[in-house]
Image (cartoon, rainbow, N blue to C red; front, side, top):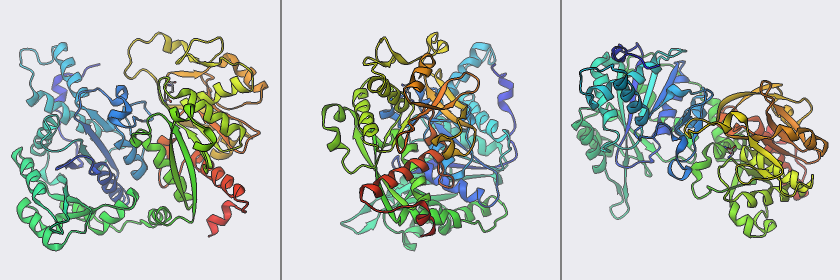
Length: 561
Ligand code: GLN
């Protein structure tokens, strides 16, 4: 139900607000800086939340090609969101919701709905004030949500000067005017290019980008300068002078060996300390010892294992962002470097599978849509099943493991998913509720669903819980009509949704580690809590490697070492 326009002018809830903008170029890691600052504040005992503002006109990234946008990050409440929300969760270790991401598409959709409802009757609907009010409303909505945050970090995508992001920046300016100014802070992230001929970093693009920001009425309080080379005091002074900030508020954002080191580096640069001081908050000494230990494991692992991801979007690694990060988390916990080998599923279809997977000790087949590369992935699954190589199938990966099993073990040669082909054996099929749907956006099985795990399975062993909740994003399902046939043939149904009886997890008992899940476990892995399935999969892969090399290995040896 639309809220009346009058409600859109709601007051600004009591909280501290930190706006984070970017300049010079995109992809500077604004999300990582925001997440790092949020972690630093949370580690000091503050209740923190974050809002990512995306200036594109899609209502959400759910309908975008992964090549356009990278991964779609799904929240517990079923929102399809920007992948920066993944960084927030992985760093701050709190679950995001649909309130934590807003797109220009949503803003305009809502404004137009109000117009149709007659909420602006008699008025001309304009970017200022209607669109900007709506943006401010979204910020206040998050600030009023439960548990009530003490600090709200608001990050806007893109760079200053983009046409699309202007209404957001204008809304931030108005927000500042309306709020208690002592509670609002602006951080601007820029880049210092290194010119090798001059052997120095250049501040001019930063100066220009701050000028651009000031043209629209925003003066940054703090500048984080992304750089490949250390920033000298002299450079900091120059930035301070030209950009109108204190020299201590010019923060070096040097490229780190791992993104998880960024909070530690920014801590040394006093980013959080300065923020706290400026916002009149109480400071304390945060305990980063566990984080530090995990970062050390990432930087100096004692083991190494090669795991292949066999997918179709491998040209853009961001399409599998959460999976890559989940490997880093499990690797950190096991003091192991997980070297990811990207294998194009179409190459597998054409080539020799044993050559492509040589030296690989685990294979993950991730989620995906559409028929391209399907047969290559099935060929890869057959190879790892027959050769006892640890296998992890996620969403589409699980569906393909089911198809491969039906074809090879049950003799149903034409078994398939109805997503790809009409078949006599639709072992993966649409549920009735999905068949009726016409609209594409936001209509998949989305968000957290319960899953009951069978005792005695590898899944149960991994979680050590009977009832788990994991996030979904798919239309097709294991066709329950064939459940008994699969069980008779030796497949174990390890997890089932207790309400709808949907099959959520499968595994093969006579294999070192062959597990598939219909959900996306990677979305819930965090550095401080590696996901149990990824952890067990990496462990099984490491074991496979040691056995292949004829070496002894035990998990304890790592923990003690
Ligand atoms: N295309 C499959 C489905 O819609 C799998 C989706 C996925 O892997 N996320 O069910």
